[in-house]
Length: 244
Ligand code: GLP
Picture 1 (tube, rainbow, N blue to C red):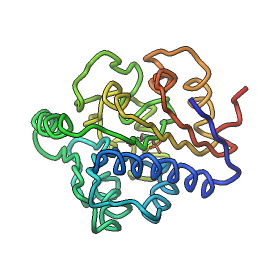
Picture 2: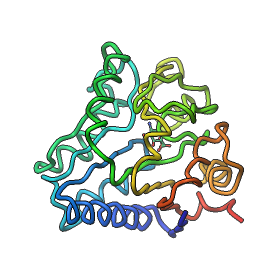
Picture 3: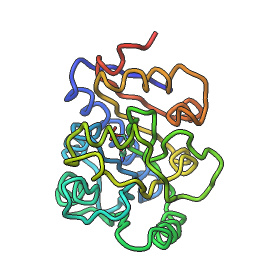
Picture 4: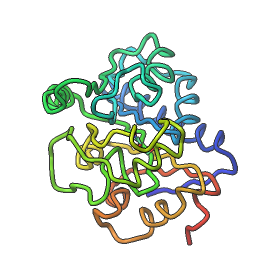
């Protein structure tokens, strides 16, 4: 695991985007196509805005998958991750080959089955992810299922995760934050060839320390990243402030 720390979120995001671009370009050069996973949340703002401007990526060769989404939220809700990714990623890349959204408005198990079949055909070269305040990867809250090999799961959201979403201002009240979501599994994230994990903010410092320096345990889902052979962590100084 390679840990990089930057004085500002913009520098952090630019460096993470460069690493992601490098992985995509390498995959396209080697096999003519690339698979990408994109996450959401405030941790991805600077990285995504830099990634869509990276020169030299043949986006028409890139198949991208959405990492996670709330169950029951319409795409036009301000907290919808489909809306987030449409605005910050998909609409800015008209050449993108295909983007597979997670749409959990209807039957969530059926949506997981649909996505499982699609992602089974697409080796993932680069996964762009974050770590939550509670140490979650995607919406795999603690204790996360480290065993399942199913790519997409219906998961329950814990109180800390729902409080984070409220605290970031995505929902008007705690009760408005959904209690379930569809999430890519830890196992499937870990199958990605390269992981680009971007984590800004002081409020993430403990989760960063536990994930990067603590024991590998499903009570800190992010700790699984220690087991990945090509994982690159991009932090700002406040997020890195508790690292030894
Ligand atoms: C969020 C998102 C994920 C993201 C992770 C950490 O809740 N659903 O896509 O990878 O958790 O990011 P953030 O803390 O910025 O939300």
